[in-house]
Image 1 (cartoon, rainbow, N blue to C red):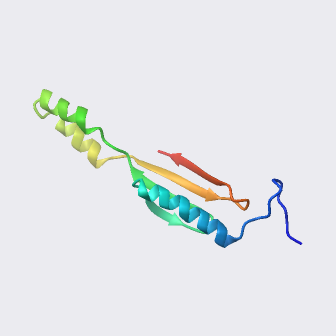
Image 2: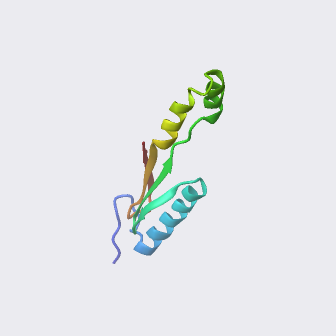
Image 3: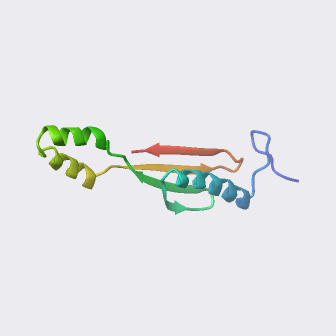
Length: 99
């Protein structure tokens, strides 16, 4: 007899969970994310935050290059976005992004 969870579905096998997770991770990788860790039911991905170059270029021109110091600092110390993708036993995919 098979087990049935609270939602009325049978639990997925580890292979099915890994396949669902791989599909979701592939979508994120196509959008520029990099995979940090990948296990059977969870993956951690990260991505550098973008810098708005248009307004920074305008300010560099207006300040005679003085704004370039700030832009260099921001480029070297960019924040990272991190997302954790999980697939539970019932096949529900969740993604939690921080940063």
